[in-house]
Length: 421
Image (cartoon, rainbow, N blue to C red; front, top):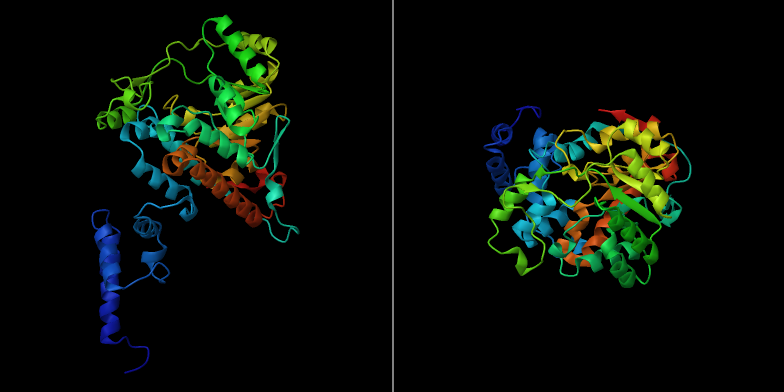
């Protein structure tokens, strides 16, 4: 028998592999195929066969290896390890409040999926490589150690008893920007020894209420006002409501704010909804703080924001929670950047889960990028230490992305490196 002729054992092994690969291609039998391979010792993740290199098969391996929640923040290899740990620790109603989008969750999914439609073209032989100092970023005159910031989100205490304090301490310790509702600024300042987050606010129909809130933020020492303008009237949050129904506890047992309307709808009825640009002008004339508009999703509104003297535009659809039109933030970023034309800072949130996402957004013109759900995962899994790990992982991955892109600094990332896939 020649050396090129397969032995009976080799033919049997190859046949078994072909059969299991066939099963793996079926959603019904994929898990069965993988279990059979694992039991037989037939293949490893590095085996040179289609089973180990096809996208679907890699997903099987990844899910199998991620089958147990981590026991400490240091064990997390990416944000999704932390997400799994939080999912197993957090009550269903609380998880639903954070994880939901609106209607069919199409916008929520698009925010993440559209990052996969953007490629980053690397440059080679560019000389010095990035260091941790390369991530330092100036955002509206303030210096931070990275362009990654904590978005203003409700429900921190539902994920950790000391949630607001833990989040403030974690962002201060890692010198990352935090945005926080005006009502929590004083407590954050006390927890961090005087580091003041940017002041987030939903304006009210009564102007005196707004003016008093702006004055309060200024008295605490806030330098930037983040006006959220993208929640207009009611919204349907079916995912949150279904998870709330599965949770037998009463909200009052752990916090005094209900996390669902009981009918799958959600709204803060006291909010001002009828924004116009004259109102924005009035805000500018009332406060000394710099003004950022959170919820800009069109180049036309970006240009108008600049016209009316806004200092920063925040490309955001509330993490997929404000409307379900299917338009992601990363897809709109280039158009808003072009419309702003360097006359205001451009911030973005929605779908940031890896450092390469940060690099892509920065290459497309973002000044800084925000995370919301990931810091909730950090709180829900390991409290302050979990939030620190979230920022640590993203910063490390962003640094690696700069290395591979041939960028010594964030400024070396450019639109010329972006490809639509």
